[in-house]
Image (tube, rainbow, N blue to C red; front, side, top):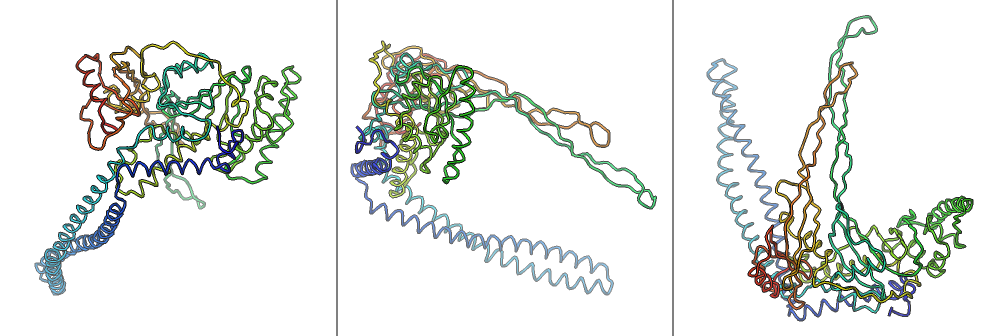
Length: 611
């Protein structure tokens, strides 16, 4: 299915095989098709953008002049205050009646009155008037600019309304490659990974699904997931206090002297703290080498490197592997190193537990492919971990921790008014997303045996539900956090969903929020000072008081033809949307027949992207 017959050479396929350029070309063609359907007047948009740019230049010029006059205004106010002080000094000098005082008083009074009159005239007749005129001009220019921008936005709305969550999926699936994406992560895919490949889809209490997408490499399933995690750590807080004191001493001549000494006391206090973070990875099921497990982590080779850097990493890692091989040989559980020292040193897998299947998996072609990826300077190099647990494979790449994104809809571009900039950003974002996905999967694509293995037929019995737990958790994590968080809490939250029931196409879930009230505390820690005294040092720390809250939400699929709208707004304050799903927030209530009817009608209509 791959381009140019290069399906077993994924790195060269992406570059030499033209996959990268083809995806950009397809994305460009797709975007231009949407623009044509939206009937975007490109020439008029250019005029609008030029108008905005010219107005911005004028705004900058007027703002610069206004800044000068505001400075002059401040300067004149200072002169007025100074002249008033000078006049007061002059008046007091006259009361003194001394000859010198009368002279000074006269000068102060004369200069003060002259400066005061000139400053007041300049302030009220020139500077204030000029500032007012410039402010008026600036406001008119801003109004004209905003009006032009709004016209540009309105002009692009028909195009924005055609953007869909499925754009990226359709673009990937339109490529002549063996990677295919699903419209949604359904329960069947999760059951397949769980029951056939032993993936534990039940996440623990400290993690929830922030986002997910699924698909196949040939016929073998994968799940790309981003988790939101919570970890309770012992955090150490630090406080300081400066102590000063005086002491006497005798100098070199025997005289008593006094000096000031100081000591900075440092105190620490450790307390439990909740930290939240995201973690992205790919779960892939394949029955090849079903008894093999191992973990490889990045070799340490930097993205920018030379031949000496590569040799240094190989020699360092291979030496460790060779020593480990000799030790395991003595214990009877031998690791037999491959003949390819470069691969052993760079792939750096030291805990494999089945040498026969390891060699079956990592053939010379697989080794060559992986070495190309690991030693590449584009786009990400060796930034991936690869864990195999029997039939299950987990790939975690550093680049996808930030680039992973599953909803490529127009909320990212919703306030854009410049067609050319929108075009560039849209195409670049799609290409960036594809590159991130492809290089998350490339360690798996490098292994020919994986592509030649087909899973057994599996058709699990499913209930009537429409939305999987993973998609439900993704949706609630992209809704307003205040819907679910306990009102007493002020931190981020872990949102766990539980399927309850289905009512006429709507799946009902309970949502459990676990968050904290982060409270500032001060602990006084005794510390010994250099002067022999003990002082209390305040250490500011934070107590994390846990709070839970249970709510309910109804979720249903959105009609494929009603993914977006040019002008219809979602006016129902309880209805939210993410990807191909709409959700009705129920608080602690059940979904009644009237609400479900409203929810269904609203979901079946087009409405804009997010509440």
